Image (cartoon, rainbow, N blue to C red):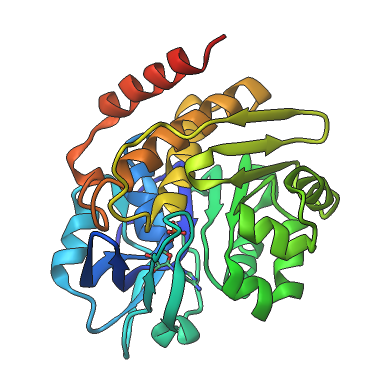
Length: 305
Ligand code: AMP
């Protein structure tokens, strides 16, 4: 087995989803927080994917991951079924209604990191906070330049204490508006983000769907609109690819100062805008980094005043 160096690592889910939007219904869509993340982050740098699948995981989906510089040495295959989520978007395309979450092999997953050289950037994508901690604890913190995490309502309600431990150990947390309010019980987003800063992270990034995003630091504030899109086909994966564009950009520039973090937010914004224009990974499979750079410059030009 080879363990080539990857500057960026992600732990998260690799999934088989069922998705329903006003534009149609699809079964067995390739999804998962780590799949979406690594597929786009790998446009910027090599990504090590730490995840688990079951024996039923389609070879065709593994091949999709192999299209990009994604190191699959830490993708375990265990007896049983692959993690599976089904959800639908009814009137609100900004938030999914979960119909079912089948954890399956995720319940057996015990990540064991065997990097010859440890990645410097780490993304703890949406997954059980216990697993996020397991991965983080196996890393030498001094060698990590930037660690960010994501989560969702499922884990906020079922594993709050473990999630608070994750928050106390990361540089940034990426949440959507609903999750930000749920975590704090605070209705005002700025007030909620300020409360989350007190829980430990240096940066809080709040995604507001079609209304853009907000970045709050200890002494910094920045807001960005979404990249305008006329037809949103399937929002699934928007949050994960936002994070993929964001972390990929940081690992690519090798900088983590405020100015670079703002640019990374813009790169996440344009990456997510591509994802929502088709089901699953279909839209992002058609793009490369220069498409994203073009949209990045366009976003810059339409925001300037
Ligand atoms: P998002 O970017 O937020 O739209 O994430 C969509 C992906 O999250 C889907 O492909 C799902 O497989 C995955 N997902 C859904 N629920 C969970 C969960 N509880 N933990 C981890 N991943 C999940």
